[in-house]
Image 1 (cartoon, rainbow, N blue to C red):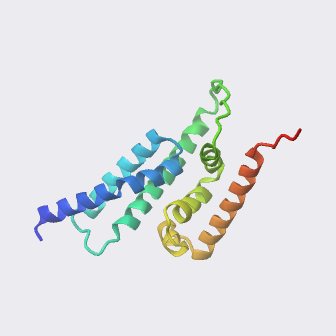
Image 2: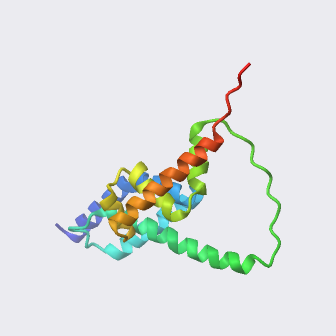
Image 3: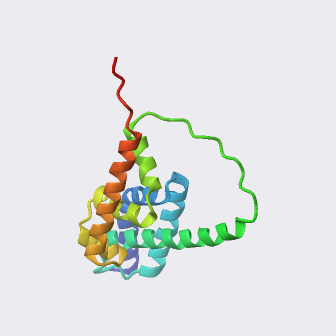
Length: 170
């Protein structure tokens, strides 16, 4: 296979992974704009790092790991920036209106999870990966991944119970 054909095949395979990468990034980042930026950066890094050497690479796992690592790198960077900005007063933000629907409640509960728990439950729950695959992507032992998923599910259940409407009886 020529280098051009391999490059074309890699780009095609990456294009097919984009919806899955965007969904994963959306749950990690919390907003579409941040997720799109995260996926764009991850795809660029993937293309640079593979540089035509994609044979024998599980591209899906590789890309999910790159998205995850890029997210954590950006999170660390934001934390540093936040420490610097703490001296400046925070602007007032308007209160969010209550929006009906279980999906919105779930999204809100997912956003409240710590990033490590959120990524674990998304990889296993939403992406359908096994605990082993998710552990490899996150570079942690399988037991740690199982514990994170379990804790995330428990916290989600607790958060959703609190948000459940109280039935009115007459």
